[in-house]
Length: 369
Image (cartoon, rainbow, N blue to C red; front, side):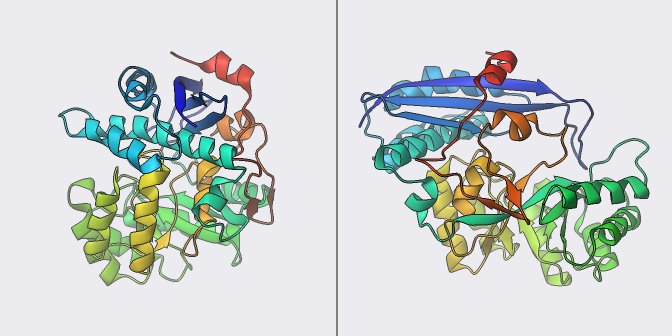
């Protein structure tokens, strides 16, 4: 089965409010929808990422640069396809955006392989489990938001069936953010997972001080505690100074970056994002290194894909979503056959490949290319 054509569509959906973290603002939900067709009529169909700036450029790279390079290739030669695409990163340019474009094609190839073989991507990768625990990302900084509002937000996630919440920190002082996390824990109760995510917002000193302030709150992990420019070294220092596990990897764009974190002894979890880091093919390499290093696999967002990956391997942990009804209209409405969340778990979407069905009217309404 050989690749006939690849189409890419950039989607931008405006949000009703700013869902920002410590180091960024979020005013729209963006994604790229990719359709790969084989000569026999099998279609790989997937959406990737939340790139709020470069969706049209990702689509341009796919259609003008990458797709012509793999046209006519067998979809089952996934390693050869990936190697062909990765060669384009050797030249100078925006490698991050290029890796996102590669991820779109790679994930579409995996979807097509699954459909052609009658297997889910979960089964192709190992099929360890058929469902996976799911948590919501939350705790956003918003003007006028009170500790009581934080409690209401956590209650909303519990009522949505989530197993827990990854809570935003790093935008205030360690003491102020510790008070916010304490309010979240009070509202959550003891049986609700609570993790914290600083989005590279602090120095190692502030991260350590914050972690010690929340040490008694049963925090599942502390994600991206330190500034980007020396993150592996600083995270290793933080990890060895605190009792809370450290999670990072979503900003890495290759498995080589994951290896850097492992060699530094910086992480207990790796949440490398398939849509940022070249797709499923390179994710497999990261997952293998993490298994050999006794490090658990998490995933940054992208539950439509990560549910298949995290459930496929024995060292998988949690998948993430945005359970707030206004934060992610793609998850809430465009993913038409999204499995229900029941008692904190999501079943792997059945059918071939990723098994996605999307609202075509929404795609056409919000497409920007």
